[in-house]
Image (cartoon, rainbow, N blue to C red; front, side, top):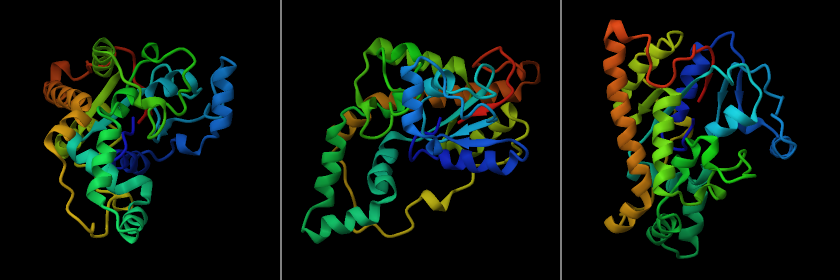
Length: 273
């Protein structure tokens, strides 16, 4: 599951590098209209039927229930989390790849990037993107368009109840075979090697294509209370991811338990991220 600005592009590079002979499909390249039509008709989208690996910003519910692909029923799912405050600022700066253009436009009209940042944080307080991207199907409202839910500016900003958040946490532990943390890059790579032996990486690469390579014109400062409200739910997921990563490290480093991942007892064959 590729949470934006959390290092998912590093995962994707590893999969492309070590996945020779596997068909890797990016959900960004799928026709949204056809995806929506398939869901409305109550059937899975079949354009991905011969895919071995799925990448891109899609929620796991779509990958499990909306797409027909080789690893749908017995696939290995991996994800990566990032410290929520750092992700929030990075997401604001990035602006879907148009960060420099946006900053220049704000300055040109004598606007304030600091004010824009505060507005960004306040619009989703808390942000629910990470929760919805990792949600099981039964948490979604009936008829939800899974192809867009969880993407920025989409319906994925809808709030969850405390009970629903708890179900998301339990689902992550049960369904994902590797839960990584960007700030723990080497340990994340170790678990990835353990769960996906064909990915022989000692650390996650830094993908320059999606990082900020230009100097931001101002130093952004988030008000503590506003930032806390914005990241409140995601902080729970981040702390849970750290705990799961530590447990997985213990599991992978203990030979008797190595074949028993926390996510599922089903055989792991193929993968989605």
